[in-house]
Image 1 (cartoon, rainbow, N blue to C red):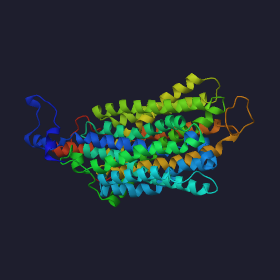
Image 2: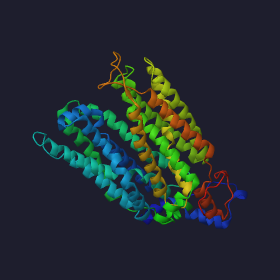
Image 3: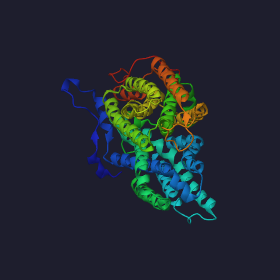
Image 4: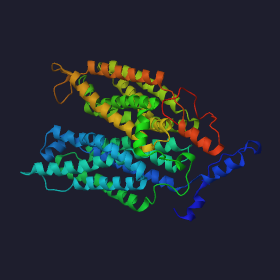
Length: 484
């Protein structure tokens, strides 16, 4: 960062009356913390990269029939082009968290952008399938795998980026914007893929369309990402970011009761939303709802989640009431999940189903960024990537287990004249009851037993004022077992 950019920085000190100004030592510390306009470029870059990677993930799912026809593959093989993201993410997540907290944000983002670009470009190589269609499918799978390797490098980054580049009054909002770029990419893929690839012959055009943004983003990251952190930290938390070594950080997390509860409950919530979004079409088609309506419900779910995340991010940035906001929203989303388990068994209830999808996204999907911020507050001074990375891994593992469980509980039913399913319809009554039950159990555990201090906010206050007395931002509660 050049010295000329110092005019873009401003001290992180609120206006106060003369009698309310902090002591000289605290004032000097506050003046030491500065924010830079370049942080918005870093945020924009990460949003674009996250969105691009999500579009690569879901490129073929909305046009599975056309993709299978062009690649001369089965629908199961086409599904694996998306499932590979989940398979690759779990084993690579530990390495990614180490990389972010040890090597730094700059290298991680640049490496992720190059892998994302190579994955997008490799998919369009090869000849139209003929006798060697298996080779061409393998080339596409290789591209998907490279993009899947890039995903942990990208999706773990928002909390780290927000901690290093943004002040405490903007961290939750920055984290929300970067995190919600991923579902926004899923929404873009659901809209663009069917529009571009109306026939099997247009699949190469579709892959080219998604490769162009990936190339531009890679260029921007390579030439524009100059450093992992700004010259001057925006907060005391950024000044002492990643103060614990990676291995010691893992040990501290495993001894932290509040963090382990967060790990369990967030993973369970992620599993509920993954199963809901993945199985929505199969659940609704049994009652005669069309694929177009199911797609509309999925879009409503994502859009309302993004809107809810924006509002919730602004709220927790202003109030710092992470725990209260998450508990309220999680409870409301669980209530909606229970209602959906009943309504999805009814016919001709389009308005009710669409409303439930909107509420489910607004209350539940929106808690993802605050959960990430809470994981950092609970585990400080463990590195941001390590604490949020393990949360993500828990969500992936529980999602995989939950998907297998629900599919095993679904039972075939006799053909129904109202069914619009492309395959033999199944009864989802028991799986939906089990899913809502898991949601209720997880929410009860979280609401009743999860209590913690906001350790990062307390540390920042202590670093500035030399005291850990709360100013309304730290909540007194039962402490976990993590040592100071």
